[in-house]
Image (cartoon, rainbow, N blue to C red; front, side, top):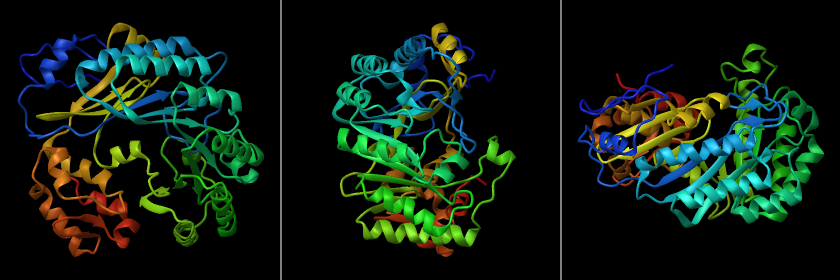
Length: 416
C-alpha cells in the first residue's frame, strides 16, 4: 500500500484507503502554502470505466478484460461514493466538461449510463453547455443504444477506430473488422452532431499508401475532430515484450508529413500534437488538460489535479476494479496523493502546454501555477537559443523543430 502524503502538521492524517471527513479535507488544503493562485482554473470531470472485451497488445491504460457478467451496479455505486467523498475538494466550482473513458465505456448498458448521468447531475453543477464525451469502440455499437446514450446527455462521441484495414486491425488485437469500423462511424454520424475518430499510424508493416487510405477513409465522413496517434511501444505491454516489425523513422516521418498535408488540405486545424479539428470543434476537455486546467478523476485508476489558492494536489485511485469498489465503500478510494512541489511545477506546466502547436500566453503560467514565469527563464532562454521555441511578450510556442523533438524540449524544463 502506498501511503498518502498529507500537508499541514495539525491536521489528522489517515492512511490510504481510510475515510476522512469533508471538514478534515477542506481544512487541510485551504491552509496557507507555497503557491499563490489568484484564480482557480476551469474544472473538468473524468469518469473511468475499467473493462474492455479484450486487452489490446499496445495498450498501457488501466483496462481489464471483462470476464462473465460485469458488476455494473456495484461499480456505479462505487463511482457515486467516490464522487460524494470528493465533493469537499471542489465545493462551489462548476464542471465545464465531462469525459467518460476506459476501457470501453460503450459496454455499459443504456440504463447504467442513464443512472451515471443522473448521479452526475444530482451531485455536480454542470455548465449548461458542458461538453460531455463518451469513448466507444466498434464491435460494441448498437444504433438504439447510442440513441439512448445521446438522450441521457452524451453530446460528443469518441470512437476508437485505429484503422479501417482488416490486417492492421488484427495485428493491433482489435475486436472489430473494417466493415464494423465503417458501420460504427456511420452510426455515430447519424446519431451525434459532434464526434471524434481515433486513428493510429506507423502500424506493423504499414505502408505510406495504407496510412493515407485510412486517413482518407476517415475524412470521407467529415468528422468534426480527428485524433491521429503514432503507435508507440509502451512499457508493460505485450508489444513491448514481443515487438512487431514497425515502419522505420524515415517512413514514420513521411507518414507525419502526409498527415499534415492531407488534413490541412481538408480544412483541419492541427492544434495539438495528435489532434486535428474543424473550426469550432476543438476538444474542450482535452484542451483543459493541455492548458494545465483542473480535473477530478473518479473510478478505478483515475487521476486528479485539483488547485487550491496555495497548493496544487494530485491524486490516483486504486487501479483494480475490486480494490477500488471496496475502498470506496470504506470511505476513501484514493491510493496516492501529493502536492506538486515548486521545483516540479515548471516541468508539469510545460509538459502539457508545449503540446499545443499554437502555444500559450506567458501570463497563463502565473495563473495556473501561482509562480512567476521567471522561475523557468533559464530553460526558456536555452530552448529559444536552440531554435525549439518561439516567444515574445504575448506568446510562447514550440517551433516546427520543437514539435519534431518535443520530448527533448519538454525535458529541458525538468528541475535540475
